[in-house]
Image (cartoon, rainbow, N blue to C red):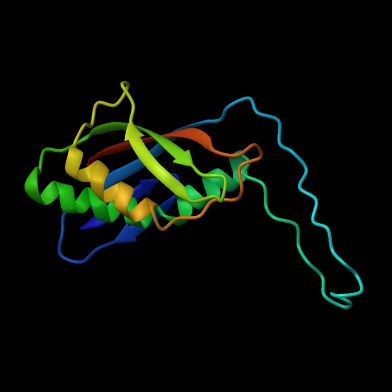
Length: 151
């Protein structure tokens, strides 16, 4: 099944019909991004260049989401096997831990696509994702997917 990620990328999975997975919107909270300082003991690390930890911002959040579109697409394809008419908007809230790991994803009230199997699959996949470090500990961010048959 070929999955078209609208305005982002095209993925192919052999032997299936075309389906469209479209990202819509990232809702970013008005949280100031903090500077991250890394203390380096120059005597111990002489010659070593330590990079500061990346701080989660809208661009890095979107980048990580885009890196994992194929996993969301795989979940959608699997959900279509049991429900070929499955389509709609998934307004997903990502809860990201202070270490950048996904703590969970929930479908918000605005979602028209409420398939528990699909959400469970995305949660299982997202448990392996790592975002940059949130500037102030745990953080919740929204991302909207539109999932529908192409064509």
